[in-house]
Length: 189
Image 1 (cartoon, helix red, strand yellow):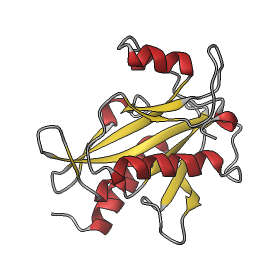
Image 2 (cartoon, helix red, strand yellow):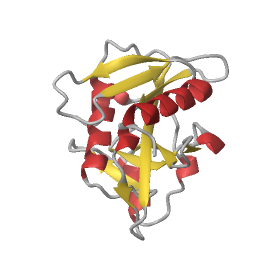
Image 3 (cartoon, one colour):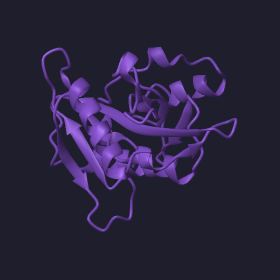
Image 4 (cartoon, one colour):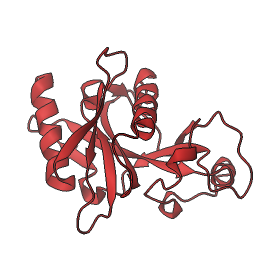
């Protein structure tokens, strides 16, 4: 069994290997949220956008559908022009991750963290976030720790109101959702 610091180090190495070195973009110094820190991997050649990621979410095991223990980290992609001093998307990402972890139930692929703001049909604004396995990390979205434990990396994809309605009818395919949240300034107010 790995200690919490060993697990955190293994996850940090995994993210660095597949996303590049991350910088701290949000820290809850009061530790009222968990995970308390959000990191951002800068845009680079081959990936012209930011990737925010948690580090430490996998310390909290969650129960799967059949009672099995599952562990997760989360990612969210933002456009290359985002600057870390614009804290809102990182804060929202941290709060959404915290809400998922607070349930202590493994997120289903297709679970939605919804928006409380009004939305209209045809609007590009994000109505909510769909939580599903990360396409960003592809085959590396599932990671086995040195002690043999499995950690899954789930992403948060933007949903418009129209996407959400398709999702409710079971007609939305995750692969059709954009990876990068372009309209982040208007999301989840």
